[in-house]
Length: 580
Ligand code: ADP
Image 1 (cartoon, helix red, strand yellow):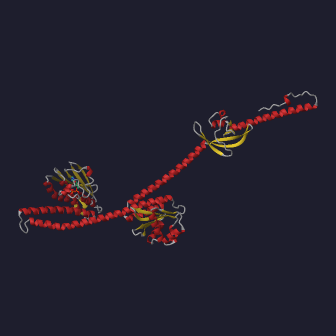
Image 2 (cartoon, rainbow, N blue to C red):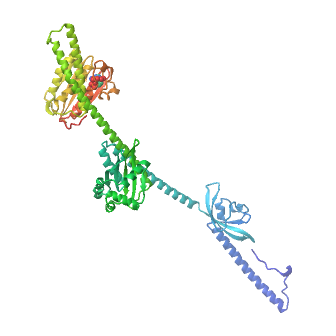
Image 3 (cartoon, rainbow, N blue to C red):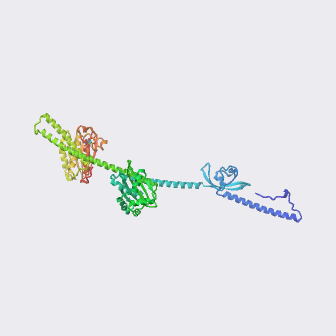
């Protein structure tokens, strides 16, 4: 802006006057003109400084009229809106202008969208009310904030996932540990130690019987020094308040949480523990009681106690305790079912053993008297009668064989078979078996080969059981072979001192899919053979049981139509006498 000195009425100033007054006027005018020139220069400089400041400002600055039209824009505004700033002027601003507040604008640009923070002040522009809007590009800051937020969220999600995984792993371990113990008595201590390993400072397992009466079954404390203290609880009677709480939890079927132990809880648990001092010794802050229910039967409850005020139980612990109690209930129930099944099995085996034994006695009399009659004692019989007596004897002998098999199986199954170890030359047993079975093989037109080492084959084992094993295997080999040979091989194992015995045949063979099943009791490839006076399907099951009693293992290889080989590996001494 340039300011020109003006003249009154646009006319010329006369400076050539000779009077003092005009001269003074002229001088004043000249002085005024000088001042104006200086002022004008100052204004110019100030405006240029102002523009410079506006231009250099890192923020975009826009002057927006009351009508919303942009009157001025600095170069940063051009950059922010990605438009030449000359094009911005005269355009509608397009955002609400709020004075005195910081607002956030999403700038809808063609490229990547940007975010700006806007502050507005009221001002004047060309003599009219206008707004100066200063916009700061905060896109990068927002992005950084967003990625920090995402990072925090991801970290929280990861921590939650890790927590879930840890809890899941704990539950899997619980389920594995608990279900591996099929003895009722073994489940409870394991359960108590699981409770204190992950969840509680101390824990008590309560049982509820059919009459609803509650008793303590197990207790444990995380601090080994206080474990015996916790176990002292087992000898104390369960007070009514606790029994009532457990019954309530069992009827609600939901775990129950007391976050901060109340005075009444302290009082009733103090009573339960015997004294409040005793309870303080164990520690008490928050408590969870979780019901153990399986197959709709209330079995009891787990009481978990956190002693630390800095770690009260929360919703997570409540859920975990519920899951733990669920697995525990299943394990306890399974253990009980298993024990019931064991008892039933024992009863069955005892019954079989008794009945088979009692059947044998009259049968021996039948066979004995049939033998006497056949021999003509007391009177000689006619040929027809003798023939019938022989039939009685044959059937009675078959029955005798079946009862013997059943008795052998029942004795093994009931764990009543004793092992009598002796110093045995395995070749002697093999020769005895050969003597009995050779003639049977010959009757069926089969050759029988006993392949025995030249020197003694010493073994500390039960000779009677070894004989029964070999008679059974060779008997089967003869029974299931139409033509060819049956071999009995004995091979020393110098490395271990054990012995390998093989029974080979060239018989009908066993299909691959049946190989696993032939050792099961009563299982036969052709079950109709039982009805036609064949075996019982117990022979191999008895053999496997006897081999196990001698500490050995039995295996089989077979090919249909080619033959089978049963291999028995025995150790040099009977190590253990566990029932099969
Ligand atoms: P079984 O009294 O029926 O012989 P086992 O328990 O001794 O009962 O054998 C079970 C089944 O295994 C037999 O019914 C038979 O089908 C099959 N088996 C056993 N030994 C042989 C063998 N050497 N060759 C072919 N099949 C055999």
